[in-house]
Length: 284
Ligand SMILES: [Zn+2]
Ligand SMILES: [Zn+2]
Image (cartoon, rainbow, N blue to C red; front, side, top):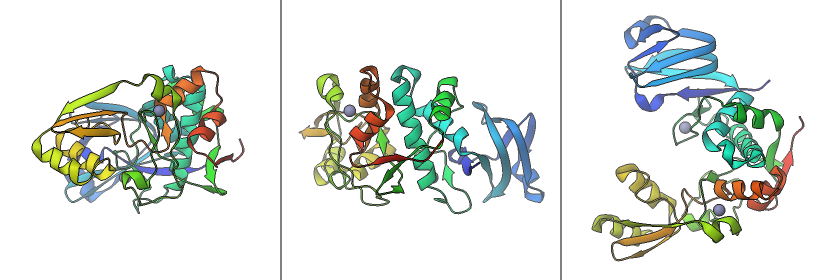
């Protein structure tokens, strides 16, 4: 069985957390680290409650709690599918998402040094596994997406606006292990709605200087919220911006994958479409 170490709730910068009804503070952890195993109920910041499965080690660093969960790769795949792909997407799309999530985990191991991954947008957001997410993980167990025989960390986003992007076109050069191609997405081409936004003079200047680039989207999103500039697929006219799609637009389009699943495509059909030249490898 393969295990993954994930830092959880790091964005909350916790000084206090309740685990299995035990309240823990930085001061308590400084003398002795704590470990919990099995089904672990975590409550934090009066608003967050979730059950994790695995071993949770709690230490402190810079006056903040550090929670590192060691869980199985398959549990994490189920948790990612549950966050990224609702049951309405269809079973084939959920299975495609499971293969992508597993490949991403496998290729991203050790990304943070003492642990593998974090649960922020830097790495991968995930939820408590739903029955549908667990089913998709189980039914694709061990399957991975590979380019030239090598498993890579495939990119995915909510919707592409009609055509997926190349990495170069959005100015994304780091950690590239697969040469993303532009792929037509007939489902988004046909019926994905356009969005429009009014933006500030400062944002317009930033976009003009570096249009349709992921760095621009992330910079504006971090400052003004992710709805401020939904995708990299847009045109700017004065202070009005009009575009289509949600997310970076690279690799798998979740909206298009759900559409293909409804038309009867298999997980392999979906992955071959959005990642030309790749193979599904591994055995169950
Ligand atoms: Zn991370
Ligand atoms: Zn699409």
